[in-house]
Image (cartoon, rainbow, N blue to C red):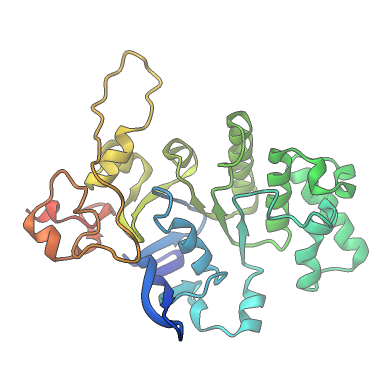
Length: 325
């Protein structure tokens, strides 16, 4: 899976949350939120990660940036191992790695104006003097489609779309190379979603940005992504370029997800794949393939052996025993 021009390399990333019980609060188990995720992200690319709620996609993004400390695995950014950096070294590295959060209201300090929120990363990293930071804030507001007078307003005085633009401006303030966007449009009206997505695409071209775009809306991911990865119960089950994944999905879970996407043509017919049962608990995932309890094509080997996540040709990765049958 190694890509020569990879900006980010993630290998066997795991994030387990301990479950404690008893009088002495001993560890009695673990919630396996992320359970061995691997992928590469090329410079200038947008990699979309999709899956049901609770599949671990947001935790994957936060673990890569060490907003959540990974339990195990390797995260290399331009050849630097992020998981082994000290707190101070990681703080300096955050100039290159920024995040746009899902809730544009919760991610902004209600006591700080938009201008102060955007200028904060510049202050933290000691970039520019007060006058230069003020000019940078005006420039960033203009870049994301807002006016300079918006710098004096507080978060509650903006619409959801405007707040997300402020969040994007804040992420851009330190000229990062990689932005992890965690469901950046899921809290917005559909009409505003397209505006923010188009803005992100324009900014990517203008500033040579690389995106890890996390979402649950398959239509949104198809619009903005170059490649798409599908997660299920903390694991990556399929990864391919956008057109290949949407037109020729390999994994039964991906096929089921895509069968539920609405088709614009009312005359078009599509067979809906209905999955039975519930998603297993990440604190007690099933043995073998995590999807075997709901898979319509389950085989005996699926119940016993975890399938390898491997390339099935032309960079189309999947973890499914059906491909070996």
